[in-house]
Image 1 (tube, rainbow, N blue to C red):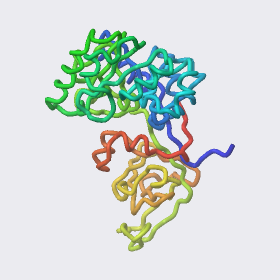
Image 2: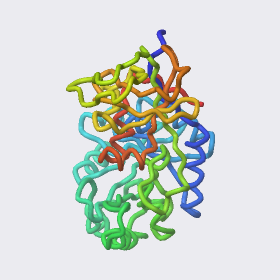
Image 3: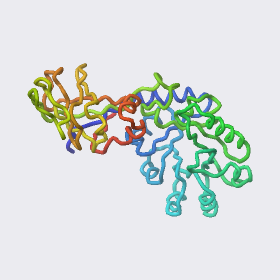
Image 4: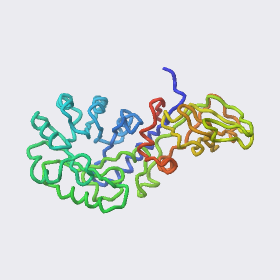
Length: 344
């Protein structure tokens, strides 16, 4: 297998430390992990292995294809998007995963097919997925084997009244069904306080280095660092330009490295003339326009760098979100398939 000229360096210790921080903040509630979208792009199988070794016992994926890719991971899964009619054969046969039922139709489909253990999502104000709280109160779940009753916060990363309204609407359902546990808080929800934790929390973005609210600032470690290999080093004379549309012109003779990285890999055009790379302690600016597969770096401050050497790119998620205007979720899940993913 040919090694790629670009890689994601993934910090196992940081991932585990983030989960342990969130577990401690969850108090007596169990702390799970959302590993949908292939572990937010890091690789779900490795994420599950590392977190299971640390003590995580509740894992959440989006679809049944994601669940089946982890069939031999040795941990129980919840499938957040429930069961379509097309999913039923797989879902009924699965012994390692259960659906999170999201609608009256899904509940009936599961009950009529003789489905066993399940989770159920209740919509307390997001208006995305979930049955109505009134359905629970009216006994819709009577006779069903519900493991976890869930809801999802719409604005946990903001200090808004909707958070408390959703918490209170969800808390009012305690004891109204046979559900063994209740779960509301995502990463930002954990930071809202103990009364949002209920019995089980479901962090996602903060596991992977995202900081969705000020209460988590300074407590979450960076997990992902993109690196790219230098394809060519060249001297650009004063007055010459670099890249498409000549957006950068050398004020003086400049040493430039061209690396195998571009917007097709998730290193987006917003980093043009604004991103930074680093090597041996030197901070090296991105110059010119980021293109599909290539990016130019001013390496004048690193005279020893040559073809084949690696540059690490700044990718602290909160800082990069502020720079790019994109969400931390987009930045993380948008890192492409051409990266080798290397856990260290």
